[in-house]
Image (cartoon, rainbow, N blue to C red; front, side, top):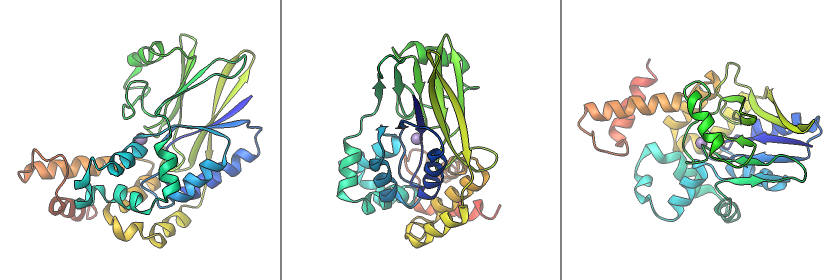
Length: 282
Ligand SMILES: [Mn+2]
């Protein structure tokens, strides 16, 4: 039995197609897709349609949660902020069918296959959809995460860093990110879980794809003109394999604080624009 494990596609159909093409050469029985399918890159409907066409175990990530919260009118103010424009654009462009599909996705899954060790799938951690588990920063906490679950394998995404580790006979696996991977070469990432000799083993895979083609889709889709700053950051993150969006957010929040907006949860557009100007001049 072989399972392909994907996470954090973030609307990047170009990378997803490259990964699926790579997987064709393997003997994969089923897919696990661990959330953040959409937002940040332009082809959100296409990615969801592709996922729906696969035989896959699928959960929500924090991006899908944002979409549902926005849909349920919990964040009407988001439409007034450039900071949130990629979420709002994605929501406004999502087909009704795809919205319904993500609304029905569970936050976590427990997979039990006959005569095989069970697998827990989460996006962040077993406790929180947005909690990061990083192998070096959270070395002591990892045992706690694994003790907290009944299953023998914990699959998580969210950090866009590929790694796996066996602790007390339990396996923790992050397949990395298909759409916005944080690595040295910018290649799309996924993992394969293989059941052999009474246990699961993980292998990591990287696939090169055409980033220029992806870049053109940012323009053609209208995403770029609606969310210019966020798109420039996302493209830089993909090119450099680093979380530039997060670095920019820190910078913009600091700038907001310096300008007397210390209590605002969101960054006012006047600060956002100033931060953009400074950032891309660097
Ligand atoms: Mn995430």
